[in-house]
Every structure is written in C-alpha cells, then in structure tokens.
View (cartoon, rainbow, N blue to C red):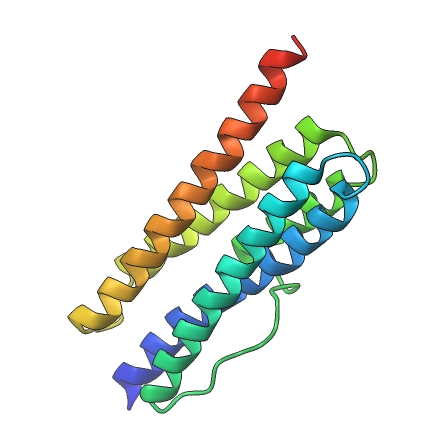
Length: 156
C-alpha cells in the first residue's frame, strides 16, 4: 500500500493545483466580466478544464484505493501563486491579470513536472494521464501568454 500512498499524494498535489486554478480563474472571470467579455469566456473555459482534470484525477485516486482531496492549497508550496493572481484583480488591469495568470500557469507546469519526476511508482496509464493534463495546461499557459502579449502590443 505504501506505493499507492505515495502516488495518491502526488495525484492529490495535482488536484490541489487544479482546484487553485478553478478558484483563480473563477475570480478572474468575475473581475473581467464588466470590461473584458472575451477574457471572461476564456477564464471560465480554463476553470472548466481544471474541473475535468480534477474529475479524472479523482477517478484515478479512487481506483488506487485513495481519497481525493477537494481542498485548495492555502497551506503553501508552489500553489500560493494563485493568491497572487487573486490579489492582482483589485486593480482590474487586463495586463496585470494576464501576467498573474501566466505566473500561475508556470506553477501548474512545475507541479506537473514534479509529479512526473517523483519517485512514486506509476503505471503507464497514470503517466499518460499526467502527461496529457500537463499538455493541456501548457496550451493554456501559451494562450494566456498570447493574450497578454497581444494586449501589451496594442497598448505600447
């Protein structure tokens, strides 16, 4: 069972980062709804993507005999970056929001890299699940960066 416990911990770390993404992007969508309808829809899609990731991770954790967390990561580690994302919304500046979101996406990429590099034994199916989600999050990161860069180019 020790093998599964380590893997369950790794997978729950990924659940945490996705729960943080959901909260961060829901906040971003709420803060951008008055002025940036395009961003609002984009942020809601990213939150929904993380809900799907959490669902798949939860199924996998359950199949290993574990219990998935439903918490965010207020307690620390690299996931605190979403707190920075939430703090950026006070000014409702599009560039600042997108920059903070990109920073959060960088943290998500680190979490997935750490999961893949962990010493937890994982099957090919587990590795495939993590790799596929990491790829989705990389696409989200690149899209956030593109929005940010486009905004910066227009306002330069």
